[in-house]
Amino acid sequence: MKQYQLILNAIILVMAFTACGNSPKKVEKKPNLVYVFPDQMRKQAMNFWNDPEFKGAIRTEADPVKTPQLDKFAKESLVLTNAVSNCPLCSPHRGSLFTGLYPGSSGVPLNCNADRPVSSLREDAMCISDVLSSEGYNLAYFGKWHLDFPTPNDPVNPGNYVDPRRPAWDTYSPKEKRHGFDYWYSYGTWDVHKDPHYYDTDGRRFDPKEWSPKHEADMVISYLKNDHGQRDTDKPFALFVSMNPPHNPYNSLDDCLVEDYNLYKEIPINELLHRKNADTEMEKAQSAPFYFANVTGVDREFGRIVEQLKAMGEYDNTIVVFSADHGETMTSQGVKDAKNNIFTEAFEVPFLIRWPQMALARIDNLLLGTPDIMPTILGLMGFEDKIPTEVQGNNYSKAFNNEQGALRPSAALYIKNVNGNKNEDGLVTDYFPIARGIKTHQYTLELTINRDYQLKGTRLYNDDVDPYQLNNLSVDKNDPIVEHLLAELASELKRSNDPWYQNKVLADWINYKK
Ligand code: CA
Image 1: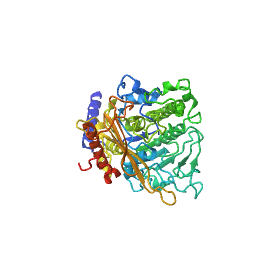
Image 2 (image 1 turned 60 degrees about the vertical axis):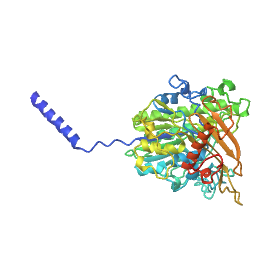
Image 3 (image 1 turned 180 degrees about the horizontal axis):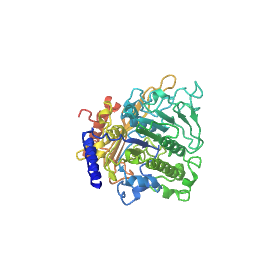
Image 4 (image 1 turned 135 degrees about the vertical axis):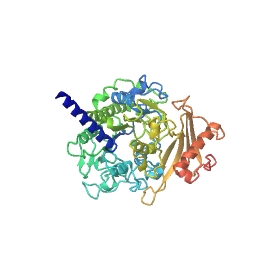
């Protein structure tokens, strides 16, 4: 009897194997995507750079900040040391992130507000969310969007702007402007961190009266758990979480949680801002403990989202990215503006990505730019052939996978635009491309022009020997190093069809013909 059973089992096993062999190749489960990007979080504001495995990966000291969740996440991620926000400002960064286009092509060359009809995400642009939606994904957006020209379309107060300020900055993005996001819990831009508001998928407004990253993480976790049937569990999901903090103001406990502030409040300002280029005499220096408190709080909320993915068994089938809009100078170089400049504290961003199907636990100096993110992620997800043809960024998924001979950039473009002309109503009708620059692995070069398109100023830093960018080198266009940098700049301006290339700006400096 026993023997008979053994034979029967063997027959069943053989049949099972045969069935497997005849069946079509097993279809791999589509990966999910969770992309978390706080606003003014500089690359240096992560503690793991101080850990032995990362020591020396970036040229300067890291900030004395506590980021235990990111420290853990970094150890199992691909960590980029040289990712940049090419146009380090809210709306232009976001336009490039979603479209894979530079700000001159995405429709978003300037920060969006009601005085700037010239800057609004192109409705006809094919965004990463449009692509993934058409590939059968559930798409969800949480937090700050800041990509649309505000109009008086308050869904709660018809005929009015949602923002009482003039010009209005905050806005409501109606369904037809959401680019494939089928779940929405978002707003335009609003900086009262403990009194945020959100519009949901159907335009209902919520004022939760709590610190925004905490609330957004709660909403993300609820979405992942599908508490209220927010998503179709048969579909993979792709979600973007745009936490506003760290973002000014950072002045008081109105801006962060007390438990996080307590970690920094006793530390002298010059120890918190220990970068050699920091000006601790600036009034802004008093913001340091609040800034780092915001970073620590965001770190915790990011960790909660990761824990939820683990709890539901989706962590290893989810591409998880942590990055930022742009950095924060926080008194470095003595500049007041947190962003919109080429200094490393503003221009460089965190970029950590984890997906077990990639070569992980790795540090890479890839000069990733914002328009590269969309095609690279689509490439990783297996949608290389769905990358829209007009995309200007490059697909670096092979470099992410650490493949031999993969395409790698030699330079990253820097872009600064300001308002151009205004019409009789005071509305900005075009933009002025006031500065362009280039960053290589060793150098940073910036050229600024006046309104007559003449050279007004230069910056040149040898970041290898001067990582705090304290020594602005003189720029001689016949110097071979400068010649090389100008050639890199010309190539990037041409490739991105930048207005400098279109108008051959500073043609006596930049050889556009090559
Ligand atoms: Ca921003």
